[in-house]
Length: 465
Image (cartoon, rainbow, N blue to C red; front, side, top):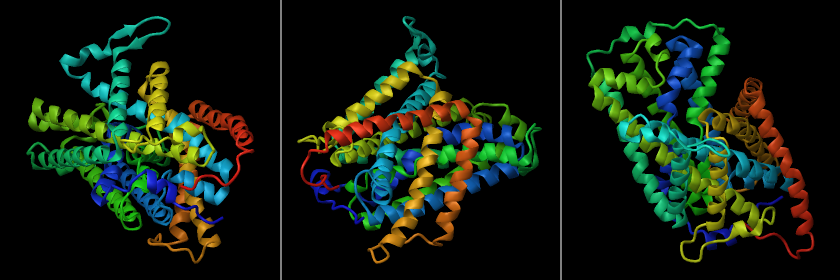
């Protein structure tokens, strides 16, 4: 199957994102609250600095390998929808529909809801925001003010994206580099402090897990912190010179995040011994409080809040493009393919996405449940999307490839195998939520059949992307 033309999409969604904004999408979506929160979980599981470092390095390499694969796919098929396009062209409409349905129902709404709830958790530490932790409604079920506040935040950021990708891209650029500067400041303060010591790197925390089990738990936590590098491909149809800027943004962005994560973890461990890291839910905050007092802790909280807002903006920006692309292909409700005549944004898709996030926030509203709900589905399609590279290399050997994945076929094969291992491990350790995710995926099949039957009488090919 030859790739479809981009003529329709490019006419409606102008390519206005440059290399700096595209890189900001990659960096901004990846760096959320994870780097500030997961060091405790990783140390509790692994018990030793060496294993924690190994998890950060392996997680960074896996993410970089995935970014290299996606760079080739994105430069070859720079259309709105990202993975949806690759799965459609490689495996057909049904596989692409399942991906779109999963992202529409689970992955993106859960990511948006998790980000907004994470923001309320950070703000709730300030005395002026303690009301976020109180009950707002008790009937017919209990709803906290934090859930309502999270819904308002989700709609405000959605409104920004509704006004056009250029405004959203500028917002992403400013907030992303602001949080990078804050992270660098935290690293510098920790390493410059006289309270830190290299001996902390040799401390350990007693754990009940084997080394392999502890490493796997730490690796999954690291992968969650690295998650989001795939979002850029979803907005590839709005990136200027995508054959150049998509590979640059993916590889440079993921590489920069890996360096920041490893440096931040090193800075925290330089100040705090293993037992102290394992004993606090916010190791970065504890380290900065020890180094600089109360204002240091406030700096970390500000960094976390800015990180989450930038990640939330990138998530909303990218997520709406996938159902939009499916609707253009007549594989979803056609109203979601609507382009706002003035703002040139996929307005209907953005609004529906916000409503899906609102429902999750109202009926679930718990951070860990929202995170686990998305994890299984995301890695399933990371693995499937990576395999499309083999299909295209075999089926289209002479196609133009502005960027080629280095180390082919070993590197993508290793990524697929590693993703399968992570997927199996995640499924076994989060069985309930993984099963829920699998059931939601399969629940889309009747809708797919209905949509195909409804559109069977339509003459002519589907609109190109």
